[in-house]
Image (cartoon, rainbow, N blue to C red; front, top):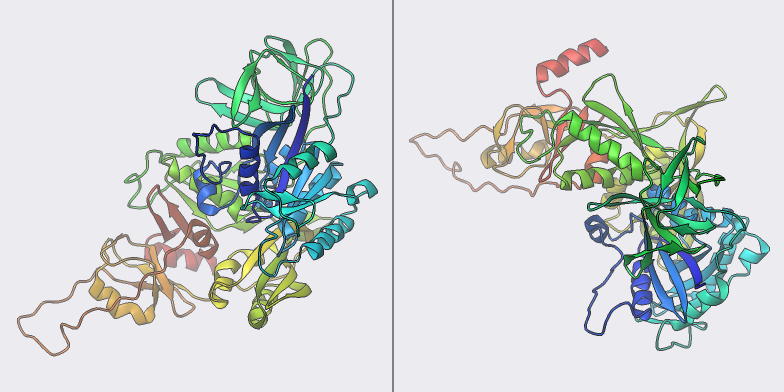
Length: 601
């Protein structure tokens, strides 16, 4: 029997987790001398590389001193909590990676809380100790305080600590004494992470992830908690509801390096992929064929907000995308439900609209971005926070918000957040910067990031995580400015844009094709204004002074997908196509909008 260690890596966004995993893979001699694997090997998804974050949990394994170490990379962002809860079920220990300057951050706390509740013991790595002004000892104390506040046990609080710099490729038990390599970390994993606990009994595997291969189809992934698995073995699939169906394992795979290797038998404690079992979902148990016993299923945090997904019915529909019908969108959302645990989809009264529930704007925007890259065209409504009725009282989700910004800008941030019903919990100075902690309704966070970055000249770093449902906090002021709306279909003429620049800030380029009802800018006042930017200059045979002045156009404001979703009002959509993002009114014609207003009042 080979010795195995299953370890999940927990870290805040940008604390160097993916870089550390790269170095562990190199230390495990996965690559030949002639291979140059590049950086951030684990962030294989395009969006992960662009955003610089981990979204999907992944598995790799290395061999060290005759022991197989399965490394499970977990997302650091609270919006991907569904991913985190699943993968921690496969681990027997956690490696907590913390920046030596910043210390543990709110997202770290979120994942750590889950790990401690599952009874996993942490091994702490204080990374980036070569940074100027870093305080490794203080960070060690902060980690202890964090664990203590999360009700860690005596054993969990007695955690070993390794210091080092993943970027420079060294780890040591003392941060003042750099070493040549990261082997002290691998030795600490062998010493402090327990081997998987193997219980007596027959086959049991909890499905914690699904992989899809275009060659063979769906595979169930999980840790074999007890018994053995053999190719062509008779099995029973037990669903979350307890329904049992007979099944057979046709192929078995274990992880070796980045790839999967087909095996005839899997030993207890190893992480494997099973092909051949039909109709499984995450949280189901694959058990013995004769005497099946179910494992406890996975609990997932509930969604906190919803958005309407609908077909693209703008005048430009079908010009860029391959999949434009409601059937395409429905099939794609149904496929996403299989692997995205924290997602929910509901039908609405209209056949071409679907209400999609998720953990946050980022959680849903990653799905929308993936769909547009696959060739889908769709429209998305304003994010709506889920309000519940608890004991006869209206309650809404509340989040913990942390803002790290220069000291002199703290007043601006506090003022902005308290206007959105935020309540300040603490203020901690860190050199020339200050870290503010707030409790704020989820509604208050929607649209806050872009305003905060504008007000602080891009200096603020914001992170937030869901805390709990609390009584409704009352009205929160929305966007103060109205929209500039196009009156006609056509090309945006530079001459017209130039004449209307004092009305507000434009979102479109000169000579861009636009349509009636498209939101082409932000009005400098609080009301919506319909304007005509398709009007060309009247040409006469008489010249007058000033007629031929060059138009000086202010560069338009361009939105990312998340910014667009947070910016729109309740009566607006974001039109998403493979190549474009446009903002538009739900009702394109002005007469229809006015009729709608009359009905409302």
